[in-house]
Image 1: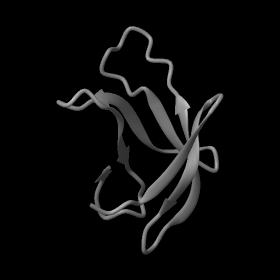
Image 2: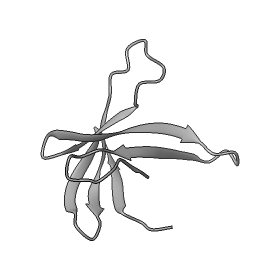
Image 3: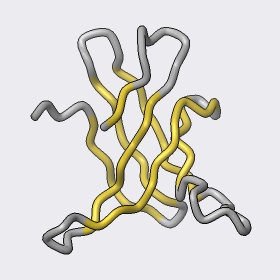
Image 4: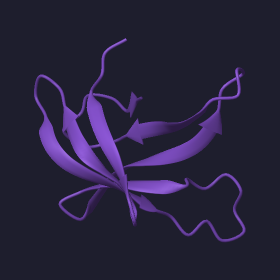
Length: 82
């Protein structure tokens, strides 16, 4: 599986870089106020203060925690699930 990003935890979520053949951008995973909506994303994915996706905390069948990310930008031919 390809690795398109690296992130580091910080006090406000995560910061990192997304890199593909056509993309090299600094991004942040910013905590999202979910309110009463259980299905709302746990994080908003931002680049240059613009929302470009969302992320959800999940747990694998083996019990490992991970973050599932959806990237959606007008420059992409389709939504990217990572």
